[in-house]
Image 1 (cartoon, helix red, strand yellow):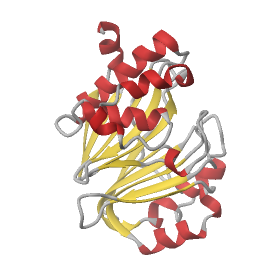
Image 2: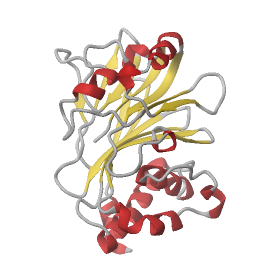
Image 3: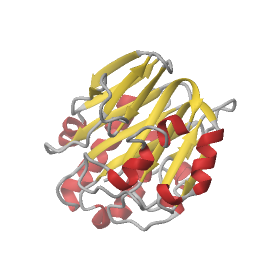
Length: 264
């Protein structure tokens, strides 16, 4: 599975999350400790917000640890809100269009996990994306499709409910045509103003997710794995939770798409 990290708060250099910590995202790309695969080398990406409403985006297919351009960019760019991701493919091709984060308008989205048996219903999943949004379908991943369906379900108005409805539709497809596990995910998403994250699985193996407020940085880090092995203050997000981050405040709400999938 993939690893990711997100940050919201006072502007910092991207490298303060992506590459400088002892267990930074780049370190996790070749030495992850809390996922099935220690190596996440099928591409990487960073989406960051600055003065414009739409995020900047840099993605490539190289392993994150071997790209000097990534280190240079993260050492020079400051942002008060960014998402970064290292990818371990669950079946789709290694290509730039399949690398996270995915961006549409002011929204950015990244995902760790899988929709069980996705290859068996990829066409059905694409059919859930309205025509107006389908032109933005650039890759072949379940993650990008889930993002576009969530946009169609009303991400602008209610991010939790929209992602819950979109997840329910994918769970229903996985139950009908796919395989176990029907859905596992942690995801981070942002509209450039707030940062949101979710942890969920239809089984007992929800991917790991933590957050920590730093008084020194005056910012919130939300991560797949803590950034320092000996650093305290990390809070593990419970499974079946949707989190909204604003300053040092965290609102945790229930996230239960299975109920919607059963009612469909």
